[in-house]
Image 1: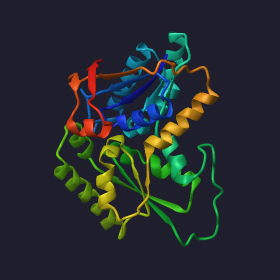
Image 2: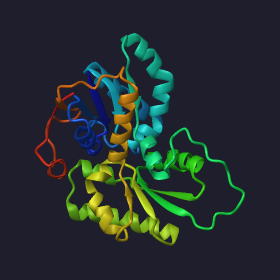
Image 3: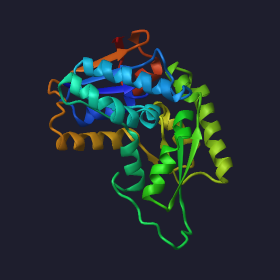
Image 4: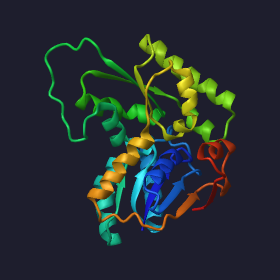
Length: 283
């Protein structure tokens, strides 16, 4: 058995890398749906279909637990799959399997509240709001999942999403540092212009963006805290596996990298982020 990690492309490697560091003995299978990347501009039903196909491929390869290391898939497809597809698929497969996303751990980290927590509304006016900026894909922004779920838990946090429709695709294609930094700066400035000031904190709400996190740090005011999805996700998954021993992560420390796109070495940008050459096999 193994842990499957799924993303539309290479962005989920940011989550995968942290999961491997946290659980080095576990077996991991990474699947990049590079034949259909990016997901951010696709219709919702198409995102659900592609995400389901990716999960099936990972379960077929021996995964007992699949992590959707993609904000778009987590925002659009996860609940649908958990409620309408997974129960029947689990029964047909005849073994315990599950699919989890990365938005829940991120919101828990951003709010300091567990997912089950429901805040009691206070009557008095809150004078000082904590302004949280979310840089994400268009699909994630349109879902309003961050605004809705954070508002349930904290009424002193104001959430503003800044969709970055081309950024994930540019990272996936291995665009140069100057081009990427220009796009990042444009979106940071666009959010500042909308708010009249910079956010107090920020979430990189697409796992591709972790690969260029240094560019976001440079574009934001010095010291602006970034809430990192990979670490929040790794912490949450490690605790989840402790509570659910029925999902076997394996003990061999194996690593497999699969792609629905063209197999072979990944871009220099990905190699630099990963810290070593990285080659994908055909899915």
